[in-house]
Length: 122
Image 1 (cartoon, rainbow, N blue to C red):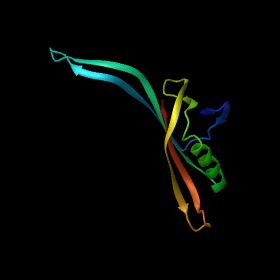
Image 2 (cartoon, rainbow, N blue to C red):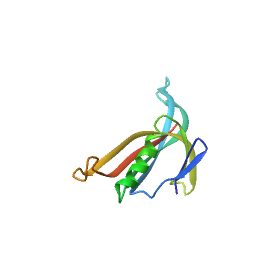
Image 3 (cartoon, helix red, strand yellow):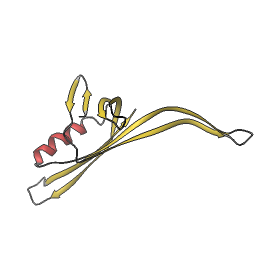
Image 4 (spheres, rainbow, N blue to C red):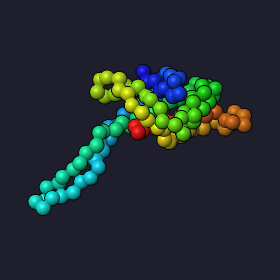
């Protein structure tokens, strides 16, 4: 189960439709020496998490969308299931958030059903 903590408040993230975790190796520099051997200076690996949800009602969608939108200007803590077999933790930012409109005929706001976003480790 994933948890997001921001400003001392912790929220459990609802079950995903799709969930993908990526390890992003970081390097500071890479160059070849006089013998042609590649010399790299590496930095700690960083996590990226891509998530997608489908919601049964527009109200469920709006709650989650507004929560995620509230994270766009801050860094926040995330505890998440990782392919290491453990719950990992880190400080993340959110980018981007996208939404799909299922049916616009359901009133002025339509029925937003699918929501996607990525958390990227700082």
